[in-house]
Length: 523
Image 1 (cartoon, rainbow, N blue to C red):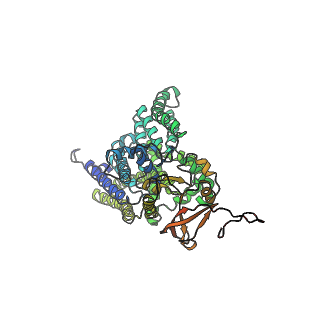
Image 2: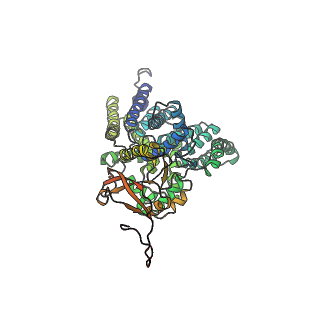
Image 3: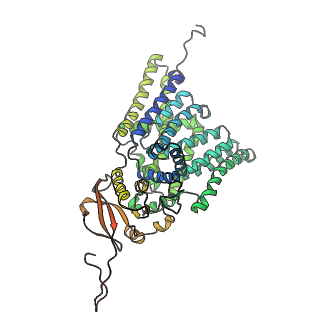
C-alpha cells in the first residue's frame, strides 16, 4: 500500500476540523448571550453598587454614591469605569444591560482567545475548543458582575506572558488588579515562573521581570495618582469588609478554606451524575496539565495563591462569588480531562475509525449536553435577586415622597442607591467614608442609633412584624410607612416583610416633681 493510499490515523484534529471548531465556539457565544440577557432582569444587589458609581460618573458627580464624599465601595473600579464610558456613549441602554453585555462579551471572548493562542499552551484546536465549551457551562456567573471580565484579563495576561510581551503583560496584570483586588497576587506568580523558566538565572530573568513591573506600575500608578487623594486609599473598601465578615463566623459561617472544601462537594448539586462526571474529568485534567500542558499550570498557581490569600485574611466562604474563581479553574481542568479522554478514545486501535469517531462524539454529548441543559434550565427559571422587586418598590416610593438629601439606611444598598438619588447610609460600611468605624459597631440597633437615618429599610420575619407598630432601634423611634411581602429562601422562616420605616421626632421628657424623667409609654 502506498503512502498516498494508506489511511490516516484518527486524531482530535480530524474529529474537530477548524470550521467545526469555529462553529461550536460561535454557538457557545450565542448561547452565553441568551443566558446572560435572559438573567438580566433582576441582577444581584451587589452589582448595583458598582452601577451606582457608574450612574454618578455619567452624571458628572464623580466617584460618589449619590452624594459626597467620594468613596471606593465598588469591588471593581474598572467595571465601574467601563460601564460609565459605555453608558455615556450609549444613553439609550440601561446600565444593567450594558454591564451584562460587557460580562457576556468577556465570557465569550475567553474561549476565542484561548483558541487563537492555543499553541502557547501546547493545545491543539480540539483541546482548546473543548476547554472553552466546558468553561461556558458555569452555573455561577452573575449578570452585570466583574467575574467574566476578570477571567478574561487573567487569560490575556497569561497569553502576553507566554508571548514574552512584558510591558503589555504588566499592563494587563494592572487592569486585572483594578477589576478585582486579588489580581495583584498574579505579579509574584509571574515573577517566580519567569525565574524558573530562565533556569534560576536572575540576570536573564530580570529583563522580563522589569518589563512586567513597569507595565503594571504604569496602570496602577495612574490609578494611585487619582485614588489616593480622592479616597485616601488605592484598594476598594470591600477588603476590610470581607475580613470583618470572616471574624463574624456566627452569621457568615466558616472561614474561606474549610467552607470552600465543604461547598466543593455540593457544586452542581442538583445532579449527582453531573457532579461525579465533572469531578472525574477535572482530576484527569489536573494530571494531564502536569504531564502535557505545564503552561496551563499558571491557572493552577494563581488559584492556589487566591485560596491561600483569602484563607489568610479570614474571608468567609458564604458568598458563591468568592468561590467562583475556584469553580472556574475546576471547569477548565474538566475541559482538559474531557479533551484527553476524547483523544484516547479516538485513537483506540481496538475499534474501526467510524466506531471510534461515533463513540467519541457520544462521549462529548454525554458530558456536555447535560451541562448545557442545566445552564439553560437555570437561566429559563432564573428569578434574579429575590429582594429586587421589593427594593424597587421602596425606591419608587422614596423617589416620589422624599428629597435627595434625605438619608436612607439599609444593610443592602445596591438597588436603593441606583434607583434613588437619596443619600444612602450603608450599615455594613461598604460605601462609607470610614468603613472600619461602621464595622466596629457591635450591633444593628447601635448602628441605626449612631447614624439615625431619616428612613430605614429592613427585611423582617412576617410572624414577628406588624405593619403598624412603632419600633425602637437603639434610642431612635421609627414608624412603618411601606411594607411588601418577601420570600428569603435562605432564612428560617422564609416569609418576610420588606419594611420602610420613617424616623419619628424624639419625644420631650416630662419629669415629675419627685421622680427622674421617664421614657414615654410603649418604650
